[in-house]
Length: 143
Image 1 (cartoon, rainbow, N blue to C red):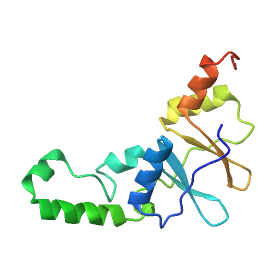
Image 2: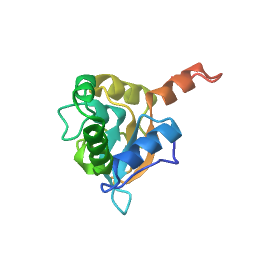
Image 3: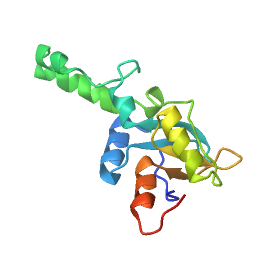
Image 4: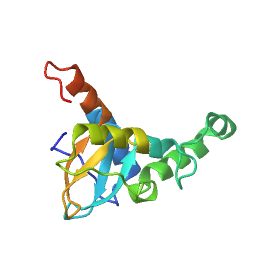
C-alpha cells in the first residue's frame, strides 16, 4: 500500500490528471473533497471509454477533421473537469484488509487501483495490482 497518495479534486482538469498519471507512472487516482474524503476514482480507462461524457476521438475522427477542428476539440477535452469522467461508485478496502481479500476485489470488480479508506471515508492509502506483484516477487512472501 502507498500512503503518499496522489489525489485530485473534482474541478481538476483532465489535462492535469493526464499529466499526473504520466509523471507518476500510475494508472489511477482518487478524487477527494477538501477534507480528503473519497468522492470518486479516475483511471486511464476513463479517458478511453466512449460511454463517458468525454472520450478521446477515434483515429477515423482524427482523419476526417481539419487540424484546426482537432486542436479545438483537444483544448475543450483538456479543460474538462475530472468530475465529468470519474467513477463515483468506487470499490475500496480498509487499512486492515488482508492481501488475499484485496486480490479478490481486484479480480471480481476488475478495478485498479483500490483506494484504502478509513471508517469515515477518508483516503489513507492506495493499493495497486503492481503493489501485490512487487510483494510476491520480493524476498519476503506475503500470504
